[in-house]
Amino acid sequence: METILIVDDEKNYLVVLNALLAAEGYEILTTNNALDGLRLVKEGDLDLIITDMKMPGMNGMALLEECKKVKPDLPIIIMTAYGTIEKAVEAMKKNAYDYISKPFQNDQLKLTVKKALKNYTLIKENKLLSEALLYRFRFGNIIGKSKPMLKIYELITKLSQTKASILISGPSGTGKNLIAKAIHYNGPRKKRPFISVNCGALTETLLESELFGHEKGAFTGAVALKKGRFELADEGTLFLDEVGEMSPQLQVKMLRVLQDKEFERVGGTKSIKVDVRILSASNRNIKAEVANGLFREDLFYRLNVIQLEVPALKDRIEDLPLLIDHFIEKIGGKSRKKIILSQEVKKVLFNYSWPGNIRELENVIEHALGLSSKNIITLEDLPGHLLDNGIINKTLPEALEQLEEKLIRKALDYSNNVKSQAADMLGISRHLMHYKMKKYGILIS
Ligand SMILES: Nc1ncnc2c1ncn2[C@@H]1O[C@H](COP(=O)(O)OP(=O)(O)OP(=O)(O)O)[C@@H](O)[C@H]1O
Ligand SMILES: [Mg+2]
Image (cartoon, rainbow, N blue to C red; front, top):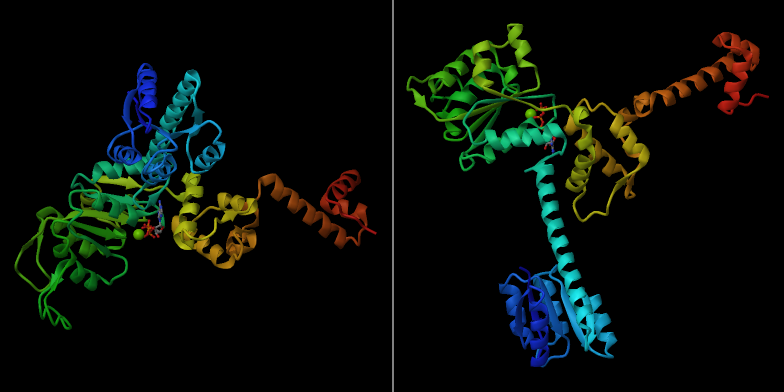
């Protein structure tokens, strides 16, 4: 049932309005002063306010202003004495829903109330809907609303609650690191460390002591005991980035740790037990590496209890507009003027193959924002290599026409503008040559 608050210093009006609207099935609250009304607005769950304008103490206009501060969407109908239209206009400017002049027609009042309530329901529904949509279009810092991304959000939600090892695969720049973090920070281990190690960035020996730590004096330069990432990640998550780069020897050691859940520091004998959740990522196809004997099959199965495959940007190009907006905001800042993309730029971006995926997109937007001085990004603001591909930003017929025009001009050049000769060179009839020249506006003297 919808609740309406009526505020009027004249008792008669309260009684009449109460009776009229209660009969319509609404729940009615009444008060004869605005301050009390404001308290009810703050405390209660109202759907509509009908208030008189002229009251001793706080008047209707002040009540309107105060209400808009706390509940901007809550509709307010103002009642004004006959002939004070200026006040009503002022109230409308301050976002009153509507006004009625006293004395009012019962039917008109009922209709206005009904419309205000309906409108409020719509506003509330819309808000809920857009919040739900916003949630659906992003997951933490991960942006995307394409089917594969929604599927990934679902998986993150589900898998974050488990301890299963997950291998996140997919091309470079598709957000594998972001997804690994999301899995950690949405799960029960979120208050414990998320420790990341890049298996491709270190030599074998360095990586080994990074992972397992070393005792003092284990090797030259090991001047102090050092805890490894496995120890640091205890009760948390260890993220093995670029796991495909791990050397065969380290793969053996890793397998042992995953099986026994214990290891020794380099140069040490004491077994160290840890409780670590393992996530790993690779932009290589590890399954193929297993087939080629480059990656241990047993380790692969340990890491890949569940596989999460992140698609390339070109396979979810419908995410492009959202991602572009996101990066414009991230790089340019919220305060910046609204930046738009020219039609040609949109076309180029949509047709580009994005080998570097989202990382590349971020760089392109940064480049463009750096160059563009206006609030529109044009072709000149894009990095050259996006345009070099020439054909890529055109449809096939467009590209073919461009090529055709070039060839015709070249043939005419070669033949000193002798049309018949040029036509022969191109293997087309003179008639067709004439037609094409006209089509492309090629004039010869
Ligand atoms: N869906 C996404 N929404 C927003 N930003 C993204 C998304 N995916 C990737 N990014 C951003 O793109 C960049 C590259 O992402 P990330 O480092 O996670 O890629 P990756 O798949 O791990 O790449 P690599 O295989 O090269 O390590 C980061 O700055 C990241 O924040
Ligand atoms: Mg990465």
